[in-house]
Length: 436
Ligand SMILES: Cc1ncc(COP(=O)(O)O)c(C=O)c1O
Image 1 (tube, rainbow, N blue to C red):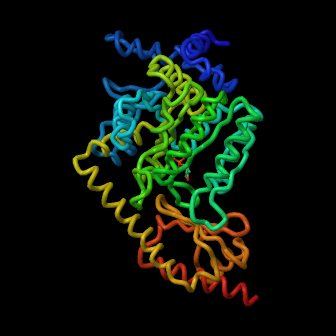
Image 2 (cartoon, protein in one colour; image 1 turned 180 degrees about the vertical axis):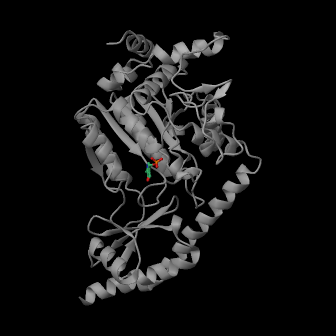
């Protein structure tokens, strides 16, 4: 094993031996190389005459650039977006995002968490989670309704084994805490380590836990950790902040899990993608919370994470990071965000109002939703894919079918005025199919 990896492992084992146990083989081997990057960092500080270290091109004191590129970005100097960003991400953005985490999650209080490492979107964060913590055959406990890409990352790429719990109770009134608890506890009995991803607001249902539910989910995970199972609990907070109802927990469940037990590693995966409405920017973050205020271990995990990035995409878009940082520092930032939040909230509430009409009752059930971008319906008598194709071909209407019975509607991209029309079209489509 590389000596730098050995050093990092020594630091982790020294005060958090269970965290070390939880790392995958790849996680144990990862390190951030000193090589070219640290030599050029040293040169940046000391080589005041000639610096011929790094693989970019320069002209005078600035980065070399083409006017046909730079003419499109008028307010930012090329030096602030053309050179590589660090594999860890731009330090100012990392610090700003961290400050934001404390502000958006006041219950974090004085808990120590890592400095967020910048990823190229949240999918990339999920993939890093998978590389660092999942070995061949490891169990990942997930709801039966889930973002399909988890399968690609955890199983196809890293050969983990997904075990499902039922997302909702049979009557579709709430999150199925009993099923969650049953599956978590039985997997904890059978395995030394389990991984779970808590995704609220949830894709595809648009559900977020109530305060009491979040408390219960966290307490189950903490309990099994206290009883001797190693737990990697990731929070996929892709849609964080888009909570539309009073009873919903407005903080990430990461706040309850970070630092809760020595056998529990909390990993927060979030980002600008959906929260800041910059899907193509590819800017996400990965942040760790472990037991004890152990900055050295957190730093070691940050270095392993940056090493994982260095060996894969090397670093994330500098331009995206620079623009995001400027946006977050904008004097109107909060106002702009509130404006768009209200727009999405109105659409979600309009959906609820339209769906109160009893005319839909015979055609489909509505899954509970209170947040995020989506909502789902469960069809009673027709097949979801048949309906999707029928609506596409006959009504020019596009929806997502999931499995045999579920249809996902993205209210995030639906004008409020179109909500009623959409559900009338769905109803007509169902009647057509039933008539045969
Ligand atoms: C639950 C969930 N996690 C992660 C992502 C991916 O986000 P990103 O586009 O930043 O990779 C999505 C996007 O669809 C999602 O729904």
